[in-house]
Amino acid sequence: MQNAVSFNPRLALRKRIGSVVYVLFLLATMVGIVGLVVLLAQVVLEGAPWLSWDFLNSYPSRHPEEAGIKSALWGSVWLMGLTGMFAIPIGVGAAVYLEEYAVKSRLTSFIEINLSNLAGVPSIVYGLLGLSLFVQRVFQGERALLAGAMTMALLVMPIVILASREAIRAVPDTYRQAGYALGGERWQVVKGIVLPQALPGILTGTILAMSRALGEAAPVIAISALVYLTFVPVHPLEQFTVLPIQIFNWTSRPQDDFRGIAAAGIVVLLVVLLTMNAVAIILRDRHQQVRPDD
Image (cartoon, rainbow, N blue to C red; front, top):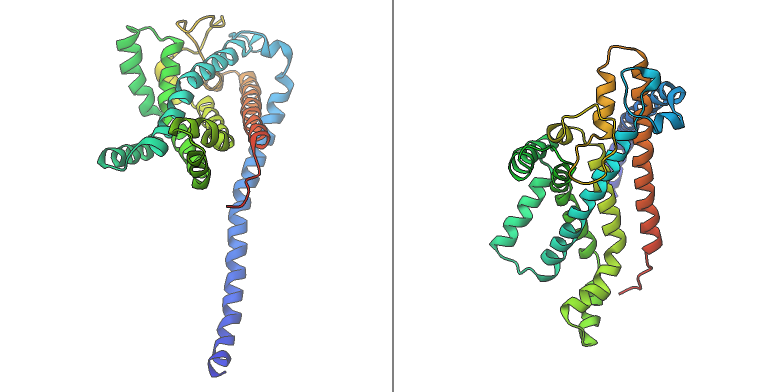
């Protein structure tokens, strides 16, 4: 009873301190949210007058009224498609091996540590690696779309592996034991039980990783270094440009009208990113299954 009486005054002080800290944290959060809303509003207001079908279906030009984003938009579509073809199968396969087949050893520990480190490497480092390895050595100096896709695959592959590992690890071990009890082999259990259960998390992680790759400009500048293309790539060995590079090019132009065009390009890029994130949410919800209690 004596301890309770002596503790009450401090309890009131701690509540006041907690309220002050809550308000400070709320204000800190609102600063970021309000800043983002203001930035998006400014971009939409500046870019909306330039958004039209002609803008989406025209090539870049030195004249603002004739400039469009067609080559960059289709270049981004090509790049994301090829990047997914490289990164997703290899990333998911590596995650399955590390979680379901690999034995704990110094080698696996070394791989896990380096995967975490690679996920945090700046993107420009991957761009310089792709320039020296793929462009200069593999393609003999040709800045091909395939070289860019390989570089972006290296960028997102650690993220795909980590996200897939977390999704596979979240599958209850009782599911595996039930599969083994029914006479299934390891691959049958992985293919028929583990992967279907982990599919929502794998889809979400891979699409979010691809969204990051879509907005990266630094590695593509090192690989492509092209900002004025008047054609759409028709095969993986052609030259290319992407949305971030085209937007950067417009912002560096001296004419004021190009600021509005750059804002319109940012709106298009945001729409593509939000669409990819929405697809990730829809696929996750569609494949999500209610798991019974263990």
